Picture (cartoon, rainbow, N blue to C red):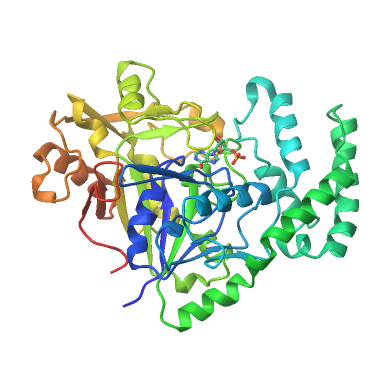
Length: 425
Ligand code: IMP
């Protein structure tokens, strides 16, 4: 049976979704981004060649697969154009396969200015955003004053809307942040040029997706960021500004909830986080340094060092629940190859799951200790070749979360995986 599969992060992002989406795209007719923006960074390594995608769905590297950017994604046109040109320069056919929703909100230059000014103003309480205007663009969407892709490609409409919205934001930039206002002419002229480049790719994505479903095609929905960065279910206010959980695969593309057949939750075999905010299992010792070093834990978008810690099963279980996860994919198992003891958090020492960042700070993580395997799992593709201690870790994850592990990633390359069950088949 053809299936619509959602792939999403169950932690604070950077779980390795890009690699898995690319892997599963072998059986997909289309790949869809449905939330977030170019704050995401999906790293793909194919035959030793590294590609980092921020906005364009990871399916673009498979010839023939259609790629959609849905209405739930906030689009910064210059970042999109740069990515298209980079891919085209390395011989990837983009413009005939990429479709951009006319209902998607545009990240305008004043959103980026506001994101950065606000973070500066917050000082030590900064969220640690990617500084790309994501939050202010979503705010404009909800405030119903945002410019959408459909407005951007209509020069008259754009002029009218931009005049009003820029006056509003310039007032704040000038009088609240004491900073330089943006010039209408500069913003308008560069928006016109960007619109000219992208207009051939703009379409009714929702309609096209339903057409694909009617044709019996297989869709892969590619999430960005992770569950604990969700605006509602994450460690608020240290979160991103979109819903990163599975419901937004429907809302952010125009599918119905009943069109989703399978949700694949990606988790690292440990945990990382970039930016500020709570992180109950964070390590500040040699083990943390070892995880960062072995896992090459630097942000794909900002290059920032990621904070590292043990796998948090309490948070993972919550992520399984709020996303309705069907099966899990455990990535970066091989990073744990050198650890004599591996810990997993199995309790928070309190009954309720925290609803606010301040409550997370009270947590005293309780750990289960597991014996490490102290041998290389790098590149293993067969479950029977996994050391017994590694199999034990997988069993502990399955038992605690109540869902099966269907894929284990044992290295960065497209080929380095154990596929227990392929969600697309
Ligand atoms: P924003 O999405 O730029 O507003 O940033 C809000 C928070 O989400 C910050 O802590 C960022 O570091 C984090 N964040 C946003 N995108 C990603 C991502 O793709 N991976 C990991 N963290 C992210």
